[in-house]
Image (cartoon, rainbow, N blue to C red; front, side, top):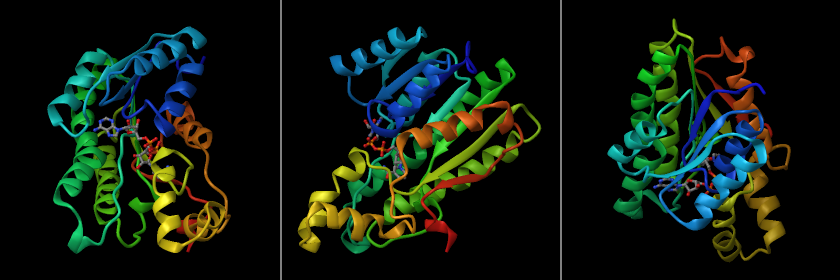
Length: 257
Ligand code: NAD
């Protein structure tokens, strides 16, 4: 029970990678706070299922990560935050000169600004508790660019910068801050892009997966949710004590070249 007694707040955790991270931390004894901007019976049922299955406290707290005050309120309502995983994220694909302004603003707010607000709110709690871990789920697109994803790439590069700055500010404390940079993981955020790509390229699903999406991965294989969750656990373990302000890539070799 590596994380017994710790409380983990995972933003954007009612699906995909965030849900996988929450479940993995709960499996290792952490009390978990799940989050998204919705407030459905399913959201609360999923939190209850995790609590019942692993015998930990598990709550769902609605907070819209596009709004700074709601980001900060999430941490306040959690009451404790030993492990903060900034995971909420959205994507939109368009040429920069046609990029809808509302989409640009939403991507910067949810993918970047939310990590600033939650970190600012969580750090005093971590200092009081004498221990803390901040793990930002960035992306290979925090290290490399692709066309038509300007807002996402600007936000994820920003997250990597924020990670380094926070790590230096906490360098002499038992609090670490790092970023994980996955390449492609087959989750709803990717699933939503497949029909458009099939139409644009006039290809079937398997061809789009292999020749359009996984073309970035020299391994030609997806990273998995459990691999990302396992990397979060590693960073939160004692072996992570001196891993500070860095990025860990899970991208099948994408950023090797
Ligand atoms: P996903 O769409 O399944 O998950 C995104 C989560 O963010 C969902 O829980 C969603 O409800 C939440 N969210 C969206 N808007 C929100 C808001 N306003 N307030 C609160 N929560 C909000 O996608 P995912 O692949 O699991 O993505 C999780 C993170 O991983 C994102 O930051 C994404 O950029 C990053 N990432 C994903 C991949 C991939 O290939 N799937 C690769 C690199 C990085």
